[in-house]
Amino acid sequence: MSPSQRPPCLIISKAESTTYQCGDQHPNRYRIGVFDLLYVVEGVLFIGEETRQWELSASQFLLLLPDRHHFSVKPCESETVFYWLHFEASGGWVQGQDEPDLRFSPVKTMGGQSGFDLSGRYDPYRIIIPKYGNAPDPDSMRFTMQRLLDLGIERRSLAFWEEQKHFQQLLSLMEAGSKTNTSAAAILLAERTEAYLRQHYAEDITNDVLSQTLHFHVNYIVRCMKEVYGCTPQDYLHNYRLEQAKLLLVKTEWPVSLIAERVGFRNTPYFSNSFREQVGISPLKYRKRFLIGQG
Image (cartoon, rainbow, N blue to C red; front, side, top):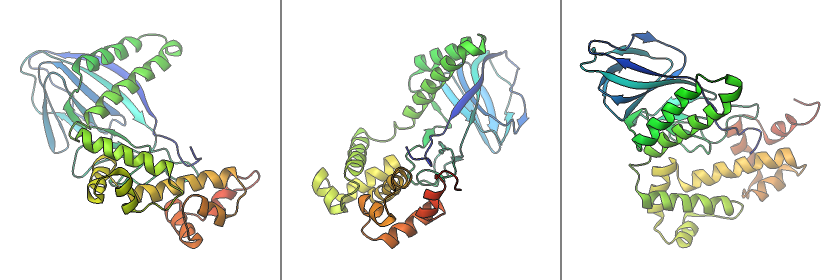
């Protein structure tokens, strides 16, 4: 991992369970500063965020955002039991325009942000969490929520890492649910394409090469990559080459022209321009930031 790459860090701060009786309702809140994940196990919770409204029934979850207005749509009509937890996220996040998923971006370091931005283009350390949906595995979801609740009352020095481990398992469950609309065949081909690009990134990889190697029409390969990773194979390859160049700039004293060649760029000026466009500085300035006494 290069100095500019660090996956987003999502840290749980509190987990609780709440029971509303008939007539009770969720509080009206504005900009609470943390993500609020709700998971209903019994009854129906009527809740809104800005201009949207939901009726959360058993085994459904909703992720409320830290900078929005949250409010009760109407009081509960029966006993309603739900878990809720608060968490914070390093790095940036964005909600998709065409779909409600939340995309958490890598932490920015002095080397810049890893991968592409979050406007639908590929980022190797992006975490995607659905905003709303049915739990893909209700029993596991409830068990993990309850475990987080139990850990919350133990000594922090003893429970912190166990709590974070279960929280990551919860996020993994939710992220897996966001992929259920993508066919298994598309995921498999996209992953095969990604693996090939990572293994052969220094070579001359055209769409025709991918088609001949993977035995699928290039249009289908591109469609699967866009569906799973949000980018074309060539976009992925271009970005991955730049990430490998960052590693070589820091770990070697090779000239920029040699690094460009080693990561698959056949034209040094094009490499330098591409690097500057992504990172914001030239390859040499990037290298100087990590030299002792420089920067």
